[in-house]
Image 1: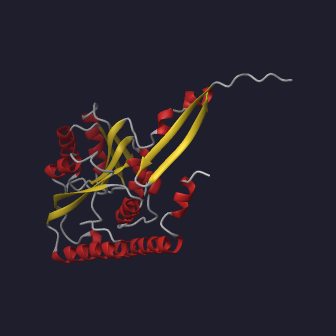
Image 2: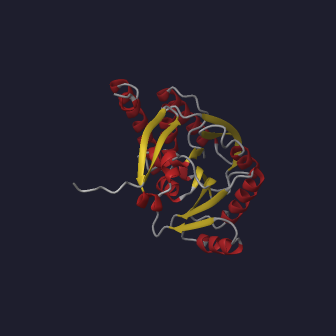
Image 3: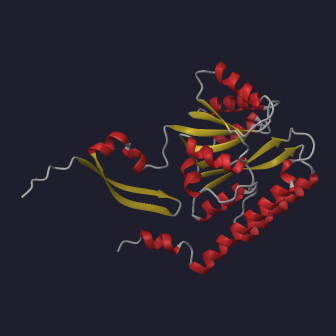
Length: 296
């Protein structure tokens, strides 16, 4: 008989619960696997080495990007979260990249990462990419146009940890026209009617568990991607807390939100949400998930 050497491994009992999702598993790792993999990443997928990855979007924001970075850093210092700033420049044609590089050079002790896209990928795709690039437990987008006041940022970030999702809505949006207000409120009413949820706003800048953005990221690549993600996570039972805040529209001229491309993408989002709601009625509410969790 051939003698087999004793296996050197670590066995882990894993239980992870978030929303309605719960996984029970036994994990065994060889000695070689333990040298390249942290067991905590398998047993606690929602954790991270820092509290927050703040993704700052940038596309031709040379007039506002430095002020945006100063504002979010001041807010983060006041809140006391550990953080990193992940800036993704989406092919700017102005000098935004040069300003950001200078900013990084002037703040060597800050955790700041800049990725410069060689071509424009769009906000939704960059948002998903940023979740995979980040290291924080929580994840949030801040637009580089400095539309969010420091006080509003502090208010949102102060709620981190009180729910799986912190969902801001706007009590005041200075500079936002009446037409946009009507379209925005109509869109919110439509999504609430379709889903049965009662959020005040779906196209804001929520704080998510970063793992959720990676795990459940939407198929939508347009303007309405946040609504699809929020509805999916609410359907899965993840908790949320809404926070009222104020924004300031600093751009002049016609808003990009009302372009034909963005309106079509919002329509696609609505179709996706309706499709998922219909599938729940046809196949049962996450029957497959519950079946997979039921021990044989």
